[in-house]
Image 1 (tube, one colour):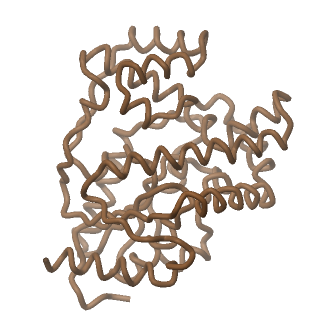
Image 2 (spheres, rainbow, N blue to C red):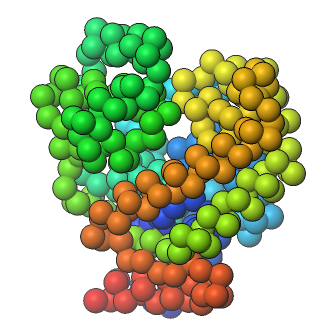
Length: 312
């Protein structure tokens, strides 16, 4: 359905996991004659469907979704490569006079797509030394070092995410500056309206618990087992995804399936808090309530916000 009101150059729907971003993105893409561009780092992986809560074809409501199922689970994620792919989709839609609706909770991916952002180079020797150290000592020890050197990066990066911890420490070492100091200011390369979906902590925690229950019921363990046969365990990035890492541990006998499920709930709640903190630091995000009591009104409020921002 095409809106009579002018749409902005880009709409971004952001916020923590389980807040309701995906459904709102579909509603906005339908209203403003657009397509959804995925900004969830793990939904770029083929076959990682249940554990990343990818919308089914039916749930997408006829709206085309871009940048889903792009990488094999053995490929290492790259924000720089994501930036290139996302801007191809955004620029194409803009050239067609249509609305890109960027949807996802991966903060660095959202900023990479939308903001004036260049990525520091790499030093193979430094990278190799840090990767060896994370293998020997574990990511927690290096995360403590990162948090001491750059508290903002320590908050933004999960202690279990060895790949991102190594990258942050590498950037600190080769640039002599905190990792987050290498991030740009809030300077967009597109006219953008960013909408944050806000859900109170108790309700969000309950949603996360219910979502993880549903993932198990829908066959997450079987999905991980199938992906393990495709090389998931050796994937530097995909193997660390929430739910997938825990199920892999259970399949290896390191914990029971019940323990894996409980840890997935705990880790996802921690991750949601980090996501919320990341997006709260961006003054451009307009927050709207995604609470159950306000869910019916959310699409209309978001549409009004977009139209006001365009015509202001």
